[in-house]
Structures are given as C-alpha cells and as structure tokens.
Amino acid sequence: MAFLSLVAALCAAFLLHRHLSALPGGRALALSLVFGLAFGALLQRSRFCFYCVSRDFIEQRDARGLLGILAALAVGTLGYHAVFGAFLPEPAPGRLPPGAHIGPVSVVLVGASFTFGLGMALAGSCISAQLYRLGEGALTAPIALAGTVLGFVLGLQAWNALYLRQIQEAPVLWLPHHLGYEGSLAVQLLGLGALAWLLWKFHRTPESPVGLKVAWWQRRWTPHMGGVLIGGLGVLAFLRVSPLGVTSELGSLARTLADQQGWLLPSRLEGLDTFRGCVTTIKETLWSNNGALVVGLVLGAFAAALIAGDFKPRWPTRQEAARNFVGGLLMGLGSMLALGCTVGTLLSGIMAAAVSGWVFLLCAGLGLLLGWRLRWQPWRRTNA
Image (tube, rainbow, N blue to C red; front, side, top):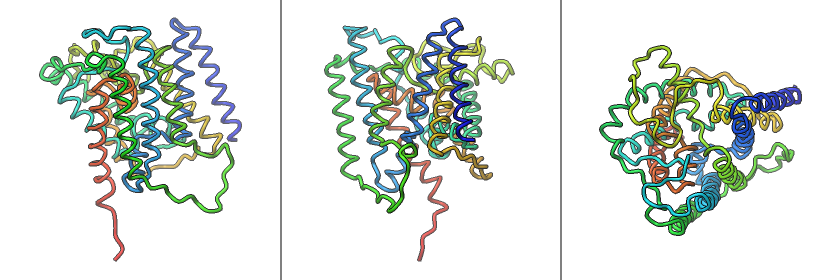
C-alpha cells in the first residue's frame, strides 16, 4: 500500500508539472513545484521545524537542530550575497534587490513576530512544518492551517490602521546599504558564528537508543546536512523564481475568500502591495508560483514520509484540535502583519541581510518561550 501511495504521489507530481508547464508563465510554475517537492522532502527528512528544534534545546539542551538552522542561514547568506553582487553591484541607498524579503522595521513587526512565536508554540510547529506534517498525515495540520487563514483575515482587517500609524514611515533596513556587501557578509557570518558558539557551549548530546537498528531509508538526516541543503535550495529558488516562503498563498486565499464573502475588509489595503515578502494579493488565477511551491512541499513531504514509514495519521483530541486552531490563528495574524513567517521573513530575510529578519528571529523566539511555558508548565507534575 505504501509503495502504491508513493507511486501515486510521484505520478501526481509529474502530471502537475506537465500541466503547469503548459500554462502562461509555466516555466516558473513548474520550477516552483520542483523546488517545493525538494523543500518538502528536506523539511520532512531533517525535521526542520523551528519550534521542534527550539523545544529540543529548551528541554534537553540538544542544540543540533538549531545549529542546522544556523547552517542554512550561513549557506544562504553566502549565496545571496554572491547573487546580489552579480545583479546589483553597488548597494546604493534607495535601491533594493528585486524580490528579496526585506521588510520595514517597526513596533508592528516586533508585536507580529512575538505573536507568531506564541502561536507556533501553541500549535506545536511553524506553518512550514504544519505543511510537511500534513504530508505525514497529521490531522491537526488542517485545523492549524484553517486557523491560519482566519488569522490572515484578522490581520487584513487591522492592516490599514497599523500601516498609517506605524508601518508607513518605518525604515526598510538592509545591511549592505550601510556596510557594503563585504561588511554585511562579515557581520552576518560573525553573528551566526556567535550564536553557534553559544548554542554549542550549552549543548548536551542525547544518549542514542541501545540496540535500535533502523534501515538507511528510515533514518532522519542530520540537522546540519538538512540545513546546508535547505540553504542551497533557498539560494537557487531566489535566483530562478523567488525567495522561499509559504504564507503568500495562504494569505492570498484568505484575502480572496474574505473579499468574495464580504467579510468587512477595507476596500483598499494601504501600501500592502508595495512591500516585498510574503504579501497577499487577490487571486485571479488558480495557480501562482507560491501556490505551486506549497503544493510541491506537501507532496514532497508525503513521498518522503511514505518511504521512511512516517506516514501515520491519528485523530487529534479536542484539546489538541483547539490548541492547534488557536495557535494557527495567532500564526496567521503574526505572519500577515510581519509580511511572512519563519521561512519568508526569518530564513529568506536573514539570508538577504534584512534587519527585519533578525528582529523576527529575536521576537518570535521570545514568543516561543512564552508559548512553551503556557503549553506545558500548567500540566506538568513532579514526583515527590
């Protein structure tokens, strides 16, 4: 059955690739699908979930997952700066590389990032991990993603007031504007190196299970391998189509649905379409580059999970369903106002040397810590 399901998943991916290739702009759509397939497989096999690896460090002092994320950021930083230097030789003020996720830095970003981190902890994973867990058969994932869509609608309703009061005049800070490419690269790598040193200083290697033998195709990939490959994929995706990000399609679906149903959205969303990042649009066609990426992500994770025997659907409890819905709602609200999530604003943003990415990293981390305490502490019991 698993073999037949795997064949079905690969056939579906092949047919989608052929269908997308025949559409206007089909080359970019097909490439987005391929990148999504690779991204989903990499996320699933390396367990590249921002909340999960943070929880491992908080509870067990196991820093390997977080070091894998830093490896992705380091590889992506090197690749992005090489691309920037080729296409924008002089990083003069007022000029930004096309398409890169470089957003405004304001108090809204601080609050939105914190909100996202809190929601991520309550839901048990970030949005990208919810998508790859959907490929693993996690039945909490659709609940969290439904909450995410509603969170986007709430963010859209609040956008104009926040934009006019805070975001409109907020600076868009890009390190090469102030340090040049060489200085920006040095600062980024030094910052990532300092974080890696701190994590390694507190790292404790967990004991490996004794006598447990797992076939090679069932073994999880090491976090640093996953991080290096994801960093390289991020650079390639930016060079050929657009930076990695998973919330643009979800937000566009929410915006289109709200517009069609008349859910009290402003007739005009001030300035939203002028920003880079995972911004939302009214969908006029079925397919978009980000939509193809998201579909590919789920299919890639599904195929990888089937091969490894990780496809294990399970009905959630009411408490799990409620927690995932609330967490998803907070993630949708946060990613709407932060113009992206841990993949778009954090991963692609830091790779692009955007200060907004570093702010998201810090504030989402603080929200994650609070969410972790809210999720676990009240129900813990100690043995006398």
